[in-house]
Length: 212
Image 1 (tube, rainbow, N blue to C red):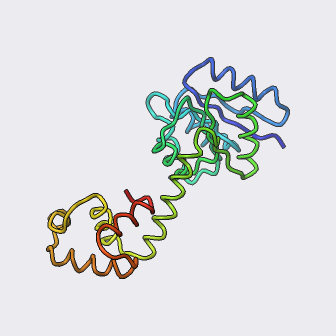
Image 2 (spheres, one colour):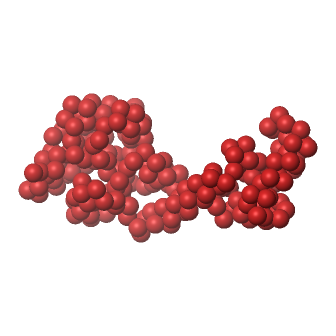
């Protein structure tokens, strides 16, 4: 059975190229082409494609907003993002929103075809040359956050972040509306739970877990 697609990009020339690319492949079926986020969202609701190929920067409703809406509606269409460039924070947001594939527009067209096939098969495609360092950093941070969340309370995590950012006990107390003595008590518990000794060791721990 053919892999059904919805294509979304605000540049008609790119849309034409995408449609030509996938129509030339026997295992793809293009159901709709869209020039903005609202059209893309409506097309996914209507056609329920296997894969949405989504430009991340479009006027009005951008790709991130589309992804949030898809996630909120529990739509099962898998998403491949096609973009000119992508920052580390944007990449992290995309992965958290369930994007399984990211391809730069500068890449060869066949890379996009391969990516869509892999994503449809349940795999992940994040082009390592462009995103490897950012993705590695994100995964370290996510794993570190899970480890810290298992060991500390949310309030204790807040205090760790503030200590790592260089705030003194009085500043932390003022920001959290608690006494300096309560901050010291929290720190005592944090040191015990994390098996660290003192603020410097705690700050280094926070840095190693990506909490900064």
